[in-house]
Image 1: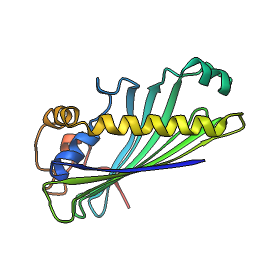
Image 2 (image 1 turned 180 degrees about the horizontal axis):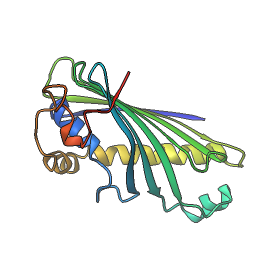
Image 3 (image 1 turned 90 degrees about the vertical axis):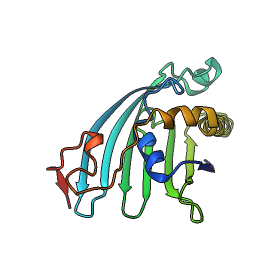
Image 4 (image 1 turned 135 degrees about the horizontal axis):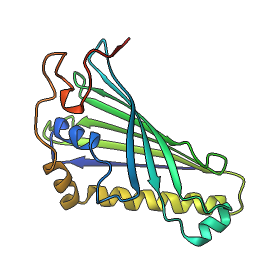
Length: 194
């Protein structure tokens, strides 16, 4: 098992970063995510948006990794659960793979919050637990995955790529009456959970 974590500060306010995060897949900067299906989306009585999404991914695993894992399977699915709390200005997203779980598990948690001293900056804290099961060289594969996650995090924090994603996000206020808070996420306000 390997534990990985990182923190990044975006030079944008929380509202803008959250809008981009909700729309980040699929995008040409990360072609590995080939599809996103919203399985459930609802508002709770406190105005928090709960989302359950299924991400379809296609990873071009190197031949040596496929040989070690004993599979040619490169299409995987990831379940993603998120809660966006506009009153607390916090978004928490947890994801985990639901395919190849007999060989590998990746459990990831992201938290977006405004910087405590500067509301024009958003801090992303990202952590993952990676476990390769039942194969020789498991620790080696876990290390490869950690390096890959670190490289992807560096790409995501690259200012030109982040700026392109954030500037392509339409600016609107996500705060408003309880009926229109999430209208730009195509949420029917009649669906409520308690």
